[in-house]
Amino acid sequence: MSKIKEEITNNANRKPWLWVPSIYLAEGIPYMIAMTVSVVLYKNLGLSNTQIALYTSWLYLPWVIKPLWSPFVDLFRTKRFWILVMQLAIGGSLACVALTLPTHDFVRYTLAMFWIMAFSSATHDIAADGFYMLGLDTPQQAAFIGVRTIFYRIATIASKGGLVIGAGLLQEHGYPVASAWSITFIIAAAFFMALCLYHFFVLPYPIADKSAPFNKGKSFLAEYFRILTLFFRRKDILIIICFFLFYRFAEAQLVKMVAPFLLDARISGGLGLTTTEVGFIYGTVGVVALMLGGLFGGYVIYKKGLKFWLWPMVLIMHLPDLIFVYLSHAMPQSLWLICSAVALEQFGYGFGFTAYTMYMIMVAQGEYKTVFYAIGTGIMALGMMMPAMASGWIQEMLGYKNFFIWILITTIPGFVVAALVKIDPEYGKNYKKEPRR
Image (cartoon, rainbow, N blue to C red; front, side):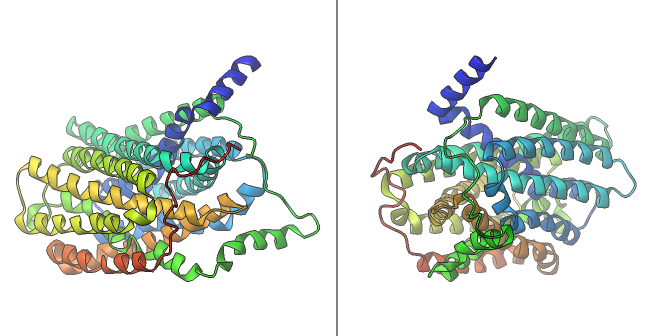
């Protein structure tokens, strides 16, 4: 048994393809369940757009505050250990969502379970992103940006597409809404348990994956705050924070209202699609386009570097938001046209978001990469949470037509912060091979 485990581990060390895709499947599914699938769930269960946006935006909170406990992940045990334990916890919390959906006070109970899942997922992200940086050198990190993005998007298809379509089909076959979604979440829980078992055998053991150095001459609390504050001692920290907060300011609002817009009746300004149609268009076709955009973005950065592609990525990310202005005014009946429009917007977003991911990796370089990356993603989550919380209220005040015009206006901060950041022209290129750690 030990020889088999050693052989699998050595093979995994040589071939990141064995573990990078599955790690980012595990990272993407719970995030999408918390951020998007929950929106469709609560829309099916009759909550208003204001309630949905407010309640589900609070699920961003674990990703916002995860830097507060990221030093613990760095200082105690290995990233591999944290990945496995958190995947087990995610599976358990998904099962609890399934059990609490049929209850009378389902909103309170399911939100509590979603929050536990989100906390476990945020901790998993800390460990997984750190594991990614420990197991790959810089050129490999740039090369696999597209790979991790594409499998993160496959996770999005599995959740936004597969789970939503599954719940929709069950409803169409006569299952009550709560029962249909309970079955769906039981399937998701079983998948996560299987994924945890797979990673137990397949995840490699990088030499660098060990507890971060701890200054024993200082108290733990002093060391904790020293590590946590290192990130904020950079001379350009204000620009970095502004980039993390405002690069996706428009998208943070848009993402919460896309599913309600597609589901709402035409008399309310929506497109009147069924749950199954939304799962296919937004959760499958749209995500494939998003995935292709991310893969292409990783490839071009690998060839020319982040600085060269930053501005094209900003433009291609934000300009397609015009599509939702068109959809809300034209109100097309054709599913093919709606599919094409959503796919184009999602491709642009996937392409532009690659720049954001690579910039976070650049900023995270240092002795405590896991902590620094967690802080970056925490600030990013805050930048998503705050605008998203108000998006439902804004939409109900403005209506869908004016709301999407508002989204276009709020793309301006994304252009401003892109003009302020400083990036090494060579960063991200395959210009230098570093020794594997």
